[in-house]
Image (cartoon, rainbow, N blue to C red):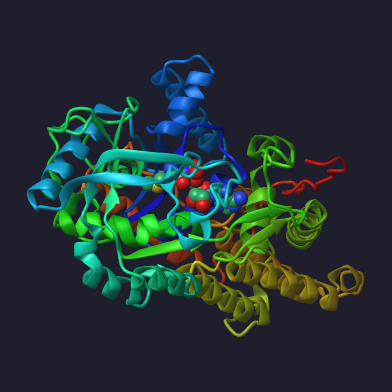
Length: 536
Ligand code: MSP
């Protein structure tokens, strides 16, 4: 079974923002880690392109909706390439293959008797693309999230009989591990306990949507359409839709990663839709927290939106990835603070890791004929740096399995701190001046260089670029964890490639792999310091 992992499909009404970038970077780290574990991964991302919000934005720009979507969807694709995202599929909900899947899925749900026509009355938030029927907002016609006026709707809609699925959904949301982190589970359990009500899955007078077969004048509600993108991403777009093929193409997903605001759609509505269509349910839905900036909600009106393009250009991939994954506990809200960002990147990556590598390579080259010194006593599995490396590696595994990127980053950093401490205590620069110390200085340097190799290896899923540079500085190859798709969609080839990745990952996590006397490239800094004085 492949490990199928999804980001939300992002609305194309705007450019990618820091929130979508955050989810996508986190998923990239998960995908890379799972590949290294030998899993054939299907990492899905893409764009959600229908609905009133997008239609209105396109109208305001005097563009045909599809032209507008083409342009903006491309900007997501392009940005993900520039961030080095290793997705396997990029699905657009305006493709003919997706439309065919939505029609086929709807036919199953309708045949089940789960579609009824009723009158929809309520306050609608176009920005959320959602009816706001919570008691809290019923009295005030303004969206609690967007602070924009809600619009009153009174129209005939097709409804999905969510109420029929009360019991299985109650059981599902109580199941340990289905909703993560656990703090989000309670919120969904309470919502379900309040009684599930049918929800409308069509709109009238909304041309920018997929027409509902057999119901002239109706187009699908954007969420009904968008969630199905997770399925259409898995099917061959050239072949006729066959929902029964999904099982052999990576469905059910192991993990949907989303922001906390869209948890209900994924943990309640979506499973019920799948139950209705007799399709298996995703294993886990992880709702991460929201990012603020210097303690404030980001928004256009406040003029404090952090642009991922600017971050990428001015600070680079490693710096931003490190900060987001290392500093914000995944699942909780996080605050982007520019000073802290620069400090962490400079201290952790440029100093603790970068300087360690730089100074140990320089010393080895100078004293040991330009290459890696003999292992000497550092060959022993009891060497303190061998113990520290193995320990860090086990902690990275545990943390990555638990999607705790912060703990994984701390484990790698902890190893670099231990190696720095070791070097400072052994002080090879002093001992090298004394006669007869070559062998023991060589062994010490070997131990530190080998620890640096472990740091490079363990950084692979978190910071693939920096990891490659660390390994290149030690004349070692990077580990294979990129997407295999579209190079191969053959299951057998994907399995073989996954096995290669797993073997490489295991082989790299043995103490003493760095070959003695291998020539080392001239030391050059692997991480530039960040000097960002003006606001990003
Ligand atoms: N199109 C829907 C998803 C459909 S999935 C079948 C959608 N798109 S979105 O572009 O508005 O949001 C994408 C993601 O960005 C959501 O997971 C949302 O939680 C996340 N974020 C939006 N702002 C955010 C922050 N300030 N911080 C972190 N993530 C946030 O919803």
